[in-house]
Image (cartoon, rainbow, N blue to C red; front, side, top):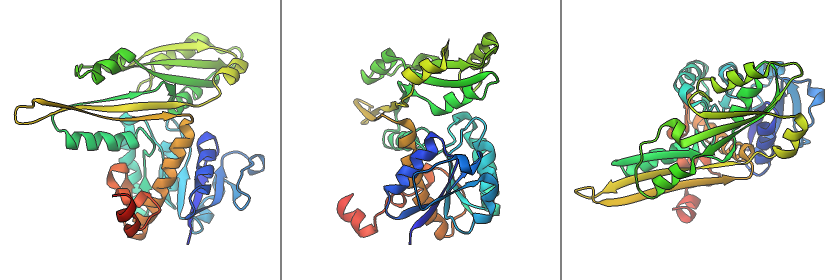
Length: 328
């Protein structure tokens, strides 16, 4: 029996989830829920329907897992709590400083209603989180460094677009190359947030908008830009579409550790990603997490989970015999 998938939100991430579901033979897409008029949304899956958010509750018995594809700044803090009442859910909430509070709020609702809610899935938080834990467990004496980019951050771009007077925006996260080289050379530098990354924003303002107010709101935005050297460039929609249409990203987690009786041996672990499409990679992670959530819920588990709570075997469409034979 296929895992029945629903998608809430049909932007870049939602379209990526639709494509990812098609690549997984144990899943089928049943519904896409949108805040737009359903008649205005055209999807690729002929067998699935498009419905308004208001229609989601009546379909709760037809869908096993609902994958939430809204933004972290405004959407997911509300959507995850709302939908966890009626569904097992997956979200990609990526505001690191707010994850503990988001976890607690979603856990209460999911637990009370007997559902599994997997939050903060993606590559960071998500895959990078897992690799940081593995690295620090294996090399307890050392220092962990995470660098993102160069690439477009969907969450930060979404946060800019939520500012009054902004028509569209893209935000690039740019690692400081000298900092990466220092880490790879084994120098173990002590780096502040500002010393590891810079941020560059390309913003299309609405006609008549106060550009200096917008610039100030961006560079002073807590949890997004206030801790970084941030450059804001105002450009036209035509220039944004021509030069910043693609959504690449990537990054690296590096653990510099020492072993031996006197810590005399140096070891460096590195996990890296180079992504032509940030949303499509994130979408594939969300779909793998949907399989894991489905399995946990069928076992009777409830409440909020992160990638750190899920056995690796739950993510993949393989039985135990195949895993032992091909993956160990």
